[in-house]
Length: 125
Image 1 (cartoon, rainbow, N blue to C red):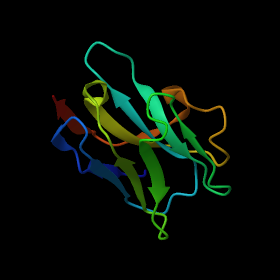
Image 2: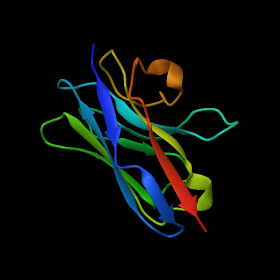
Image 3: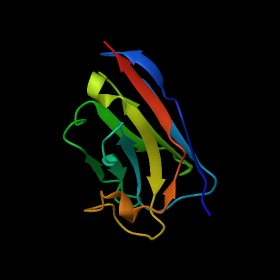
């Protein structure tokens, strides 16, 4: 069972930046992604990274501001978040699929088996 641990969350002012990290207990060669969930809202995919092609997906709300990447050791996933806005405040989760393959079309949480405990991001005006 893969263990995922997120870090890097915190409180920032609007316009600020944060870099989230997700450390995996073992090498991950499957699709990985970052999700977020705000109170009263459904969990949504904001960025995914396919393991072989390195193709990325970004939700429209974060395009141009967030960047997903993975360390060369394939055990750490990052999410660089710039120009954070009030609506970005949420619990952020790292997730990985348990089967190999592209992330293409797989943005619903049900496709992801392994989840971290989440890291909180707060944005103040």
